[in-house]
Length: 173
Length: 279
Image 1 (cartoon, rainbow over the protein chains, first blue to last red):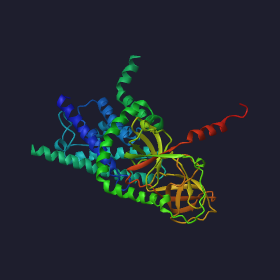
Image 2 (cartoon, rainbow over the protein chains, first blue to last red):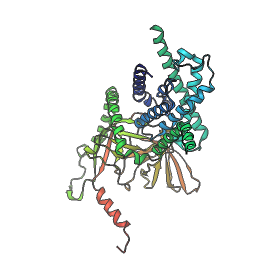
Image 3 (spheres, helix red, strand yellow):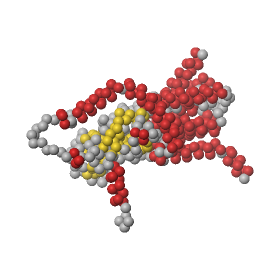
């Protein structure tokens, strides 16, 4: 990774975290939906990043959210899980092009179908992990499942929206 | 040995993953200890500063509603003032003031960050140990009971909200004199559960639940909630009461922190009770 890539990722981290803690942690739609848009940062970590760095960054991103909402380590655990599952996801989801170096995980290089299945699966796994770890019981299994599912949809909606906005900007350039 | 090292090297990503997961789970299940740790206070200090900025913006936008709410409370309190009453009896008894000693003292604070969507929810307030806040103090809003202080840094404190699995409030049904325990089942932030109320008591939907005088954390008579529905529990000896939480968790800003001035004395007394007799 060159300096420019690092700078872009640091900036992206700060902006996404800012939006998360200032706006998205306070939405409380239906009383429980607060989209975890910080996942957008983890999803966009470049393919070239070594796996250990991916895991550490995922953990740290989740931990930051934990500090802001006082959940101990729930988000850190879920995000680390997403980071760990990413190589497996990438192998499972077929894309039009091979993951050659220089390719960015996003719509611009790999298309909407790829991005939505990649982001969708990650987001769904993440919110199931967060909701079941938070309740820490299978009591009311389906209620929790429903909540996690709606949370995932809301998160995916905003992540897709951001991806869309970022690509509009790119096209103009 | 070399094989082992080679093997460890091969599974190093898995090991790192497991290490991070174990760390995260430890932090999750030891939250209370963790929140008091010095290293955590560092991260919390940063988060608190950021959230203060947000709180300032939000409270500026909400000034109008906030003023209205406080004015309402003022009117209620004013109506209780001595000057609002006329003397209906000419025989005046002099009250000896030494009979009354102030037990509770109040501080105002602002909620700068809170959640309602987890099983264990916390609130951050902008008053800390520098202003005399200690763990164990009660917190309530103009609406009703909000929570209990868990940890305090110099300028901020972390409050376990009543939307937390470890918070039980000793609660009384107003006018009925019976006491039960209210807790939160983790489902909807608008509703709590009151247990331990015997079934021979007649209940009505809308009855007010208030704090009892037994806890020493809250003064008696602060609203906890309003009965929404009730049924008998498995033993059929007690009610299971669902109540509407009095504090408005959708819009929490100004709150009061309660300091019990004779708490130390009460605690010393409790300690005496715990001592074995032969000592």
